[in-house]
Length: 171
Image (tube, rainbow, N blue to C red):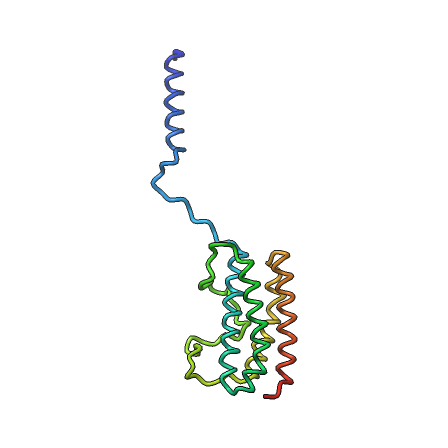
């Protein structure tokens, strides 16, 4: 084998290798997996939105009930705003993956939307929803960033206090 043949074969081999590495491949790159933090935030935001809607339905009972529940609802709206601030720009807050969203917020079923013609939700249901939400927070904090874990701890404490306060609420 001469040097010319050897150099030609090596050059041909490099050309084939380089062609295989080109960026002009016909397959699109695999999609990046969703950020676990964004998935958790999306789930938390959805749960909070459902809890706020539950409070709105409970307020349909009477003006006295609405007035008594308004401070609770406002705190949940503030939680929702704080969670949304942590959501990365462009992240989806739509339906999350199965099992990512917990029933912690006592979310109403699809048949129980927030249409004005619906029956009011009893305060006992709000109390149960608050208990479930507070109980879910430690598990959610386990996979959260330190900033989100601290926020979840505060939210969970607030929900636990709500559960107790709703137990003694006379409306």
